[in-house]
Length: 259
Image (cartoon, rainbow, N blue to C red; front, side):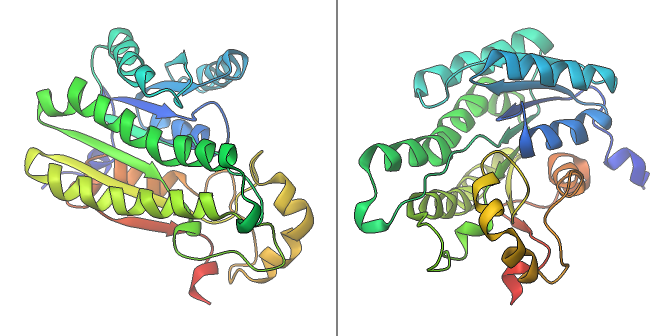
């Protein structure tokens, strides 16, 4: 019988994390790094990446910054190559990069739709495909963790700005997670996703400033997501502790979607 602590140990493994310079992606980077993984962080802004790498270094976590715009699918293979050149391998891919745009559905701008779908759905597929071809399929093992959202399961209240592209993208992430898990399961690649509720972040600042009190009141646990609330779930689904879990989406929302 394997010791439980070893099931969570990621020593010697490498995780590539898109959107890893801040927010939920950085929280996941901290979790995987604390349990031994080396992490490659991908984002557009070099200065934010440098700050994130420095913070991780203070915690004893080895990290590499990769500046890239994932809206361009041509960048995905190079991102994977840079990660593998830096660390020699890749074992986990975390797709956390995303974007949102608020507007009424009848007035939703084409550039807003293309940006949200492009970054929050299409780029996830392109980076996952690149990681599979570069590492997971050749080595016969890999774990993909997509960051979806409770927006995949619910709409928005009528008094709030419309988020139809974000809802559609995150619903697509959940469906894509199942499809890839079914296709790649026989090749020992697991694909799962997390569906966070409201966490304070740059993306949610505007919504929380106006509707935060209402959102908390509608959450059974009575609070927003915190700095550590995705860590345990991410660790479970990224390592051997979740070795028999694939195609699943774990909702982390304080119970908001059960009422």
